[in-house]
Image 1 (tube, one colour):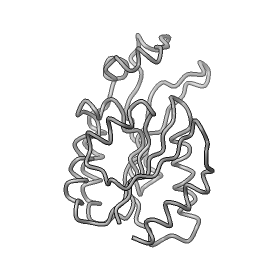
Image 2: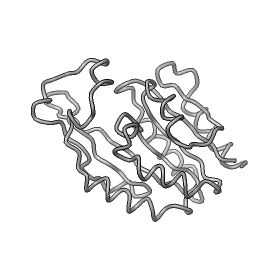
Image 3: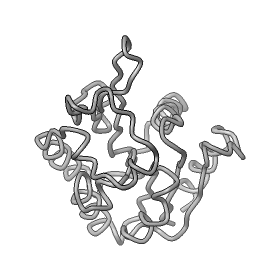
Length: 200
């Protein structure tokens, strides 16, 4: 059975760290037969300013290679937008995105279509809801794998989850893990994923 696993939380709640931990756990649990593809968007921080200044992209399954995805525009470095402002603004008015990185990701992920058990899409957000960013490759993967038993693990902010489920043709069998509420442990979430994809 196809499954959608949703890891949601607020800004800087640890979504990417959690998905990296899950990936590491899967790798260390003798699951070499579990074929994982997708992408992780890792935050880049200015340690002196104690501020996130952008994102690098990791295209799975190669966790060692990172690509420059986005950096804060110079006039945004000292500006801390409110939650309301972040929801209203287009991401490209705050960050300079490397479109070559999006293209590289598309090319690499296309090669994994039909060869993947579990897709990781880290941080589907406003850019994708505006049919920008990773929108094109995600929709292509979903379309071409519609009749395959692949499952999907996505992360997003809580504000976007409902819109994402309406905008993308993800499986309707959905399991949620809320980092804000922490109603269940990461171990429980990991086991739930493994149980469902191993019994499809």
